[in-house]
Image (cartoon, rainbow, N blue to C red; front, side):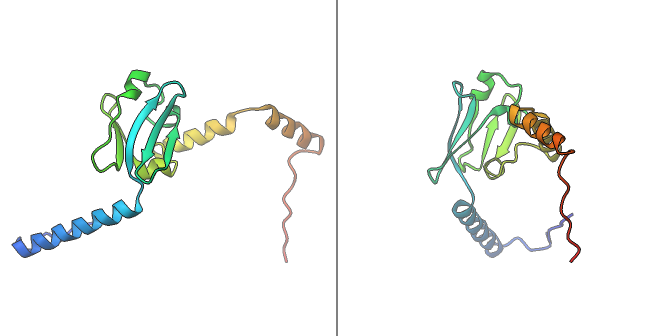
Length: 149
């Protein structure tokens, strides 16, 4: 746990210094972190679409995001950005996501992300079945080559 030193005397000089530090931190974040310019739910594609201030566009299906997976199209469309563009918010769902986290592919808590990974591993496809059959004919999954040199 981090404790801040609150023993500083509150003076105009200290206040000006803190304001200057906060402004610098904001400028740094604006220059280095992704910020959203707009957000909308594309009902036809079933995607949340976020346009970033740098011109890039980021989208994701709501089923990937914790709290959005069972939301109605009307709830998904009721999304807004704060003025800084650092997050997206769904009031009726009580769901918030940071833009930096979304762009990094973080769609929920660690537990949520682990569950997503497990679901992905359970998915079957014709290619996955064919590979399993091919490996089965060879005696199973190929053994790893371990070199002791």
